[in-house]
View 1 (tube, rainbow, N blue to C red):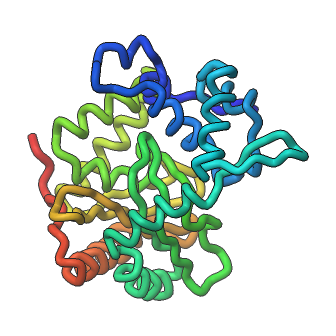
View 2 (view 1 turned 135 degrees about the vertical axis):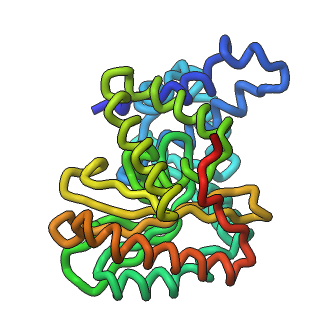
Length: 281
């Protein structure tokens, strides 16, 4: 099944939209869009599939995949006549992680919380309209969320994504809200927006956001943001589990406050700036 292109991706690769900004390099944007179109579950993709996912003309895709292969960001299978991501992409990701040091600091505290709550605890950053897991710790029980580092989840309906929204400056949050509205459509966005507003109000009151069967019908979670990099970048943590193990009551009374304390401890060890606890008007 072809993946739906986001409106953000269309803007990033459209010569018409980019032509308004003389500093915007369309060829570079298209090359990066090709790298972004590979999903964790993908093995290899051909030029035709890449063109369908990105909306970039197939002749242009062919030239860009050829170039990215020579640069070490894609690897080409002659037998399949398709491409896969190459170690050059991984090197960029590890450079980012090494620069923040957050995984090394956060993991022991995340694992301790996961064990104590018998839940899954994750750390993520935003990539457009989704959150990408940088770290994921599971509790000792058998029934935890089957996700791992590199997994992608929506910003709009998850506790982690809503926590990130809560920490953004009003102008940046409004811009992201507009992108999500365009992506989901007015009808679906109405109910999603109501859930976000409720989560943001909860964050202002309690210091954490919630998602109660909003992302998956049988999953509940709490989310807390953290500012890193001199307060300029925002990451977010969540603690989630199947709804029958993690009721709304337990989420509010036990799991959410425990996650707040864990993230506060991680922030202290990193020397990071705390995210605001009251939303801007």
